[in-house]
Image (cartoon, rainbow, N blue to C red):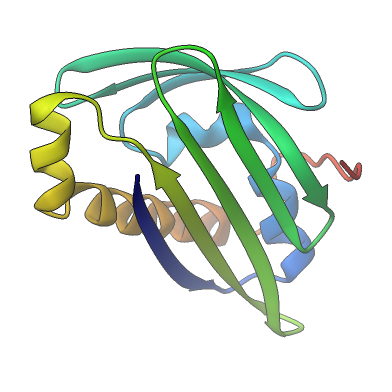
Length: 149
């Protein structure tokens, strides 16, 4: 298993950052390689990704969700094996630190080489920068899900 951890400061309150992150279907607007996400239930999402020419479909189950604090997930079945956690820490009333941690299992030689060359780290860092731009430009979330899991 490989691991990645990246953080970014966003210029919005913690509730705004968290609420936007719960809108999984908006991820393709700021996550490279994510073609589509469907929210199937409160705790199950279906992902379609395409990275380095490799298309994958898999489900992810939310294993823990605490409003304004964290969202954790693990893949279930499908063509990818990963788990992760995103946390939200208020810096002050108008700024939030978002930290994304992922464990993943590269599949095949191409993915293993890409991982060793830091491709996944750069991808996550870029996705967080695009999230920052996305939420700061809007100034408000596109929706929210405030339930606990």
